[in-house]
Image 1: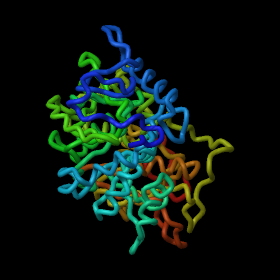
Image 2: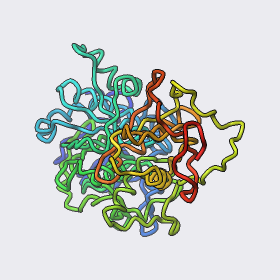
Image 3: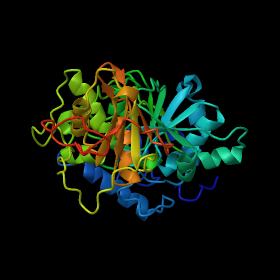
Length: 425
């Protein structure tokens, strides 16, 4: 039988592979062959670079190229994903989280085709944790395949908030390298590990939630156990174009977010982390970050009373600008100073704040829509007092809707808290 393009020669039955000469990209009994240097000094990055180099040299990947610093979109990814619906874990699952990388496109399609709930992490977690992919009613297979692409994920998705009480039954991640023991190496940015830890933090997964990865056969190699850390995610099933590997991995998966591994820079880039950190801090957990005792990373300095030319003008009576966020369901006894302190702790201080205590709501006015969307992502599931607040992009208000509101600069709390309309606090 002729091999398929880019997938190497067909594998002989296991009993005939003792004298394997199929090439360095094959893995036998979990032992890396040929192209992976072994020894006490090997690092995760060494393994990544060698696999990336080999896949490039053997033309084993499709677009995007080169594969370096990526989860490789390997040739044969669709064939590898065909094993996915056959897993008992897939058959039993109702809600499945699949990473957004190209080689998992067919896995996303199978989830949608089986009428299961598909969750996809937001790219680099910039605007939240996941999106739920909702195909249009009566979607054909062709439309479902479009929904499974990166463009479809953008067009047919709705955000899933921290308080959605979602339960994920099965997790699919991409890998650069994985061992038959279930040990995994990603592309080095830590997003898959962090996504899983965040799901643990919000109660969406448990130690018993199965994890699947889909890779080329050449990506199945030996990984020294000494390279693994507590925050590293392990896998239970490995799907390749030629094999289904049940790892039987007993190493514990991450038990939550390891805040000591999180930097202040990462906190600033991932708003939802700030919200989760605030929750865990309120629950009495140690949330000390890696690079210092700073207790409110990402918090912005309070602006002065003088408005710069770049600052937006106070909202005109009868309208809310499109870069404003409405916070509703505020507790009856909450004060504006409490809200301001919470916004500062989460690093989402607005340019202005319109307080409507009697209506149990407030409007946060940001410089542009992007800042407003970032604030919404960070405030999902946010609790103030005993209430979980409702956070949405503010609609254009009719005249009079802002009646009784107090427009406020988010200044230090020693300044007066309330004033007449349009007076800066």
